[in-house]
Length: 128
Image (cartoon, rainbow, N blue to C red; front, side, top):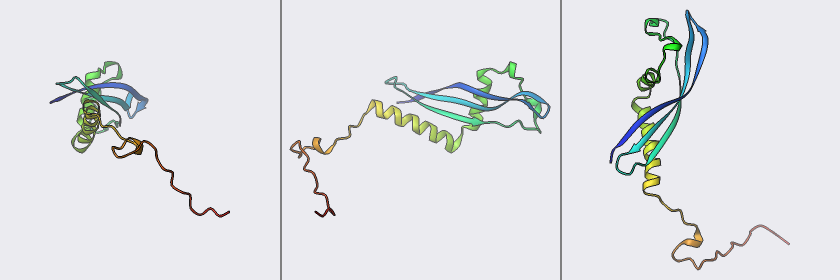
């Protein structure tokens, strides 16, 4: 069972001016969706990532009107790494597992030894 992942950029925030650059993206909202290859079951993780324009490396700045989703996803892939990547993919896997192998939480009435009715516990501390 392998999970394949796909990114979607769902929202961006831009500032009109940062240093000498205009229309600078400073925040991106995104969703990473994982699809289990055998069952087709999907799980997803919504995220939000802030960005700062590196004043030392403005040569790599991409004008807002020239941005593509692939460029922004590349930024995200550079940030969502290591422990953060592990956390995101674990949450997605957990969702997939809950769908493909659901667990049922049973109340006291549904336990095998239950007679179907619950005896109320007497209240304590009330004096008449």
